[in-house]
Length: 384
Image (cartoon, rainbow, N blue to C red; front, side, top):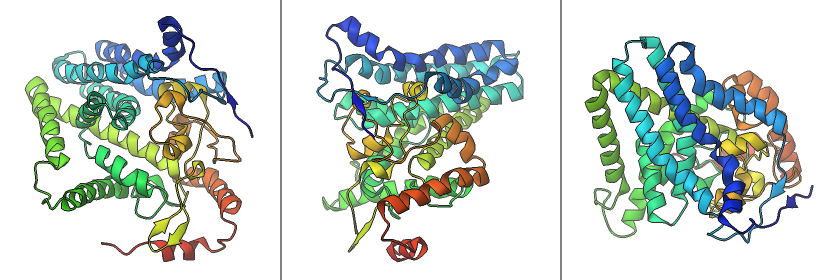
């Protein structure tokens, strides 16, 4: 299947802004968060309804986007796209911490309304905030990388940067990657394995980098010191603004955000395996090693994260120029991330939907492997 290519971004600031405008839809979540808090009641579910359900409906109406941006786009063409991710940082921090202060003293909000509100905030900071941090951490610009660190510290998951850049991209689709979901592994079994495994692998990766410089893990160059300090600042700020109740709500928001992240990680690579070449080496990452989705509206919200096949194939590409692929080059999800996330929470339904697709993928790309259980057992490294 061939994918069409669009012309480069038109010249002129107004034209460039117009091209980027659909991706600004995430900014609507900020005023909705405050509306939820001010109105209370069932309105506290507004953020969940918007991100999970409304965008699923919009995907059904808008359909697929099978066009690819021209790869000759310049950094100047990227300006309004970069603004989205950088501007989100203060907007999210002010909103989350502002509501940490506001919610505990808001008399019209009951306990369950406060909990519902911060579940919604966690969905927002996980769906948008962590996703934007993912885009920012891949950039060479120090400001953008610091913005990524701030967003991750606000959900108490700072090590994700080390894990993602040093482990996930190197070992995706192999047993050494803790966030590659295994075939027939339900999300509820995957989740604790991924959360614990990503922390351990991130620390080991940073420790190994320091060891290559003849430095101990305790060296101040270990980013885990920075991660801990930044997270501590947010914890202390939550206590100062909202007391122990505020801290509990802040931690709830962080927990939901991490769940959102790992739910997406689960979807992105479920059951996909890179071929082992022997001696601990694996084939190069190709578009076929990530699930692809071309749903237009949810890609606006997720800044093309669903074009994940291209992200792993070319990690240095900014989100506006990520390419999409047809089914002859990359496996296709049957639905967008919001719907697939809801399906993943019901493992029997997920397996019924996805396992046949994984088996077809295996037959398409690795027909020579006839016993996958034996193959996976033989290529899984011994615990270290």
